[in-house]
Image (tube, rainbow, N blue to C red; front, top):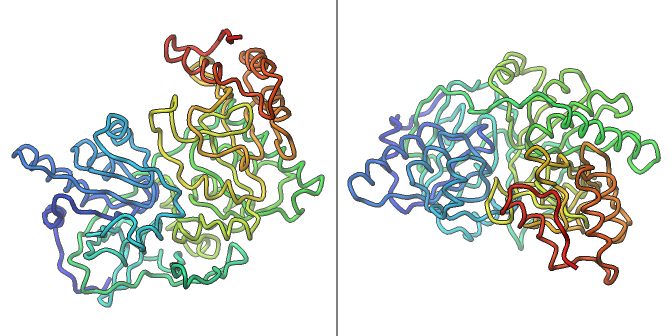
Length: 497
C-alpha cells in the first residue's frame, strides 16, 4: 500500500459530511460495503438529533449492504431517501412507516442515472478498498456494484482501507464504464470470460480527502441448509433444464446461468451441481454465493462472473488462501455490465429468480407483501428476466404453515409481467408457460405448482369466468389477500358470483 493521503478516524470522516448531502457508498449485498464511516455517521446523526438539529443524508449503493450501513443509519433516522435496493429489517421498517423515502430501481439503470444527473449531485463517495496508490488507483474488495461511477461522479471521496481483505484481490476486477448516449458503443463481451476493462478504478487523487483504516470482514450471513421444500425446488429446476438439453431446446454444451440470492437459489445451484445430466457450466450473474465456490472447486462451474462475492467469512478466507486457483475462475465487474440487457440477450443466459407470489396467468411479484409493504426490491431480477434465453421463477407453493398460497388469482404488486415469465417452478412441479395462452397458463400453474390445499379453490376461480382473453374476475381477484388480512388465512375463500 503506497498512498500519501491523510489518515482519518471514522468520526473525523463522518464530521466532514453535512446534513442533506448525497452519498454513494460501496457495497453490493454486505460484500464490499463501507462499514465504519456509516456507523460513525449514524452516531453523529443521533448526537445532532439529541441537540435538536436536523441531520439526514441520501444513501445510494449498488444494492443491499450490511447492518453497519443500512441498519445503523436507519435506526439513527439518518436516511432521507434511499435507492436502489435494500434488505435490512430496520431500514425496511423505516421505509414501510414512511420515515425514509425509497424508490425501487432496476440495478442496471443505476450507474447511468447517476452519471447523467437523474439523482442529483453526489457530494461524497465512501468506498471500501484493499489498496490505493498515490496516483489514485483504487483496488476494490469483494464487490464492484456502482462504486466506479460513484467515485467518478462524486465531488469528494473517502476510502475505507480494509486490511482484512487481501491485496491479492488485485486482478480479480474488470472495471469498465460504457460511454453514455449518444456516444455509447457495443459492449465487447461475447463470452463470460472476456475481460474488457482495468483491474483498478482510477480517480483524480485530489478528490480523495482521506483514508480510514479498518480491519473488518464483510457482514455476510451464511445460508440455511436446504430443507425438503427448497431441495425439491432445486431438483425440479435441474430436471427441467436437463430435459431441455435432452430435447434440444438448450445446446448440449449448455448456456451461462444467472441465479438470484438466498436459500432457494443456493439449493437450486446445489441441485444443478449434483445432477449428472447438467454439463459443466459458466455463470454470468450478479452475486457469487457460497454454493458457487464449492462447484468451482469440483469443476462443475468452470467460470463465474458477477458484481459481488457474497461469501460467508470462513469460506472467503479459504478463497484468499487459494487465490491463484480462483484467479482464472472468478471475475468481478460493475453491475451495469453484469446486469446489462445487451449482454444477457447476447450470451443467452438462463435466469433463475425467486418470487414472493405468482398469479395464475404468470405475473410475478418479487418485492411487496400484500401489495403495500416493501420486502427488499426488484434488484436485478428484471434486468435478467426480460432478456433471458429462458426465464425461470421459483418459490415455495405456500407459506405461514399453509395459510398463504404463493399462487394467487392476481398478484398484489407486479414486477415481472406474463410477457417476461416463461417458467414457474415450486416444490410440486414445473409450469412451462412458453407458447401458452392465458387459460392454458392458468391451468398449468394451478395444476403443476399450487399447493394441493389451494388447487380446488384456485381452479374454481379460473373456471368462474368463461369470457374474455384473460379470464380475470376483478371482484374476486384479491379476495384471498383480503381474507388473509382479516383472518390470517387464505384457505376456504368463497368466490362471489
